[in-house]
Image (cartoon, rainbow, N blue to C red):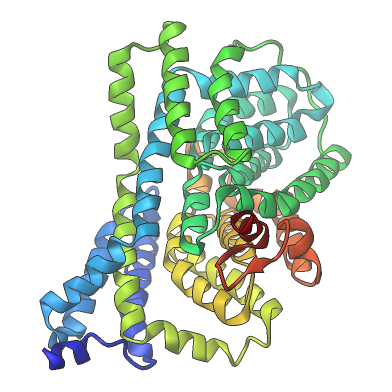
Length: 462
């Protein structure tokens, strides 16, 4: 018994414990590179990330077989079933269900068409950016936004004889704006749950960086963009936009995220049935389809949670933080380090949610050591994973644009026009240098003793 307890005691720092995680990245990245060299479409998404992670988990069990398979599984299960992981998994499912039901009743198309109808001809490109930003913020998906707006924007660009790379960059960067900021985006959910912060706090911290960056980008698009011709009136229904607005407002006022998403699903279902767009049976089917759409990120999150617990137990995080100490001189350099680590992981995996999940525990430990506000860390995880996702030509968003435009728009031609993401990166790094940023933007300091914002502690003490 005593021997078993000794085996399960957390080990000293060891870089070897990181090998399974690195193996996952190598397999996932390597498969994508090989398939892309053979001309396979969506090459970086052909080898399932969950399978690559499964291989990494098996290797971890083999590496530490002396501990015993039952003991190792106890470690794995403890990480996979950790409260934050389970909460994140449930939110993923509900967010997928809402997105599926709301999309089926025509909410996505109505939102896109309404915005494109009211855009003045002179502001077509910045207008497309704004609509993509709103739609992605409301729906929580950059891929869904790209899929809904690219066909319309492409036709507008052709009709008005606009620079098509510029038009498509506006769609994609607008989509990444919402993917980063949305309350129901899987990246937001992953970032907040891994750092133990509330959605509204992360939204506030994020918005102070994202909104000014977006305004600057819009001004540049107006000053240096092409003028186009009006697109006319497109079909839309204002009532079909209500569920998105409802979810956004309820989340912002601080309602529990589970309640917000359930209300969103019910409201989308009622609007859909009420307008005749879908039936009650369709609603049930779409909820299940939404769950299925989240299966990959659901399983991946669970597996990463288990592997992260094993990595931590066998000294991997201790080793990484010890090495990072050579480069980190304080909270500022550590914040930049978290941003760089997240971006590099996203470039390797071509998936911003995966990047956040993989780095979540590491970022949390670095934040504790250097007293970085977890709200800032959550924001940086989301921001820099989305920024990098907008610059890798093999990313899913770029590949979808190429597919929807019948490969007439080269992803590499779009990159120089990703002004919003470039500005966001600069603004975010500058914010690190502002001493009073957390107090002003995060609405008070973080109370490390109670692991919550000081204003929440004040409420408890009343």
